Length: 164
Image 1: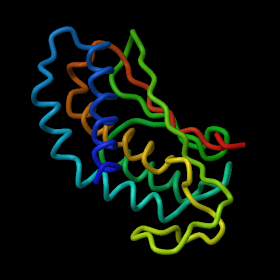
Image 2: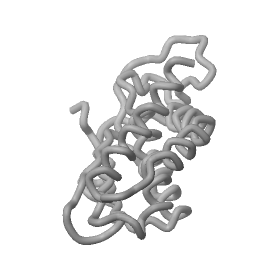
Image 3: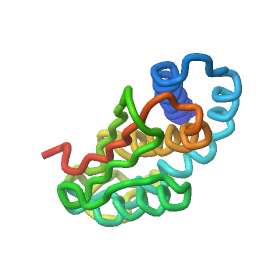
């Protein structure tokens, strides 16, 4: 449960920092309420990503998962950067705030006994990149709902091969 609350806190922190940077008079109460409502989705998203860990520059399923999310939420993006990387954009103009996550996994065998265990033998998200991705996608959802109020741009970077 503590891990789930950490996901939520980071997603809220990302959105609050970004909103503070780009919105002068944004009421944070609805954002916090929405972020709290996202908790089950954040946990589910992390678990889904945890199932498909991929090594650096081979994050094909992970990249597709992210692209599908961005399409579903009508968020503009460029894919194929450094092979599997993605940069999405919300808002326009300056200032520009950048939020980044890693998308790769490690060549580590995951121990038995986890509910959402890696389906790729010898690979796992041992450093929390699955959680980082879920947090950034959660922030994207919250920001997308407020895109018209942004006084600038938010770049969402999904970086391949951070562990290399």
